[in-house]
Image 1 (cartoon, one colour):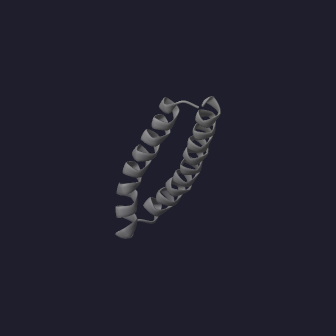
Image 2 (cartoon, rainbow, N blue to C red):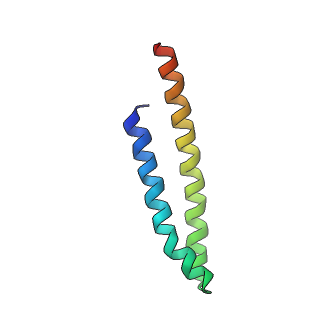
Amino acid sequence: MSESNILELWTEIKTLVESLDLDVMKNANGNASAGVRARRGLRLLKNKSAELVKTTISAEKSDKEKK
């Protein structure tokens, strides 16, 4: 697990949050379809966040082993 993998995951998460913004706003104004898309995106965000946590922990462990 390299630094580039961590940064790549972080970029994906930031892009996902940006894409969710519009759907959350539309849902707040009463658009039910946007709410479905927002919830789907939030579940994906949760999974990507967990993946990032696991990746960073793995990278830290491998760095400690190298020392």
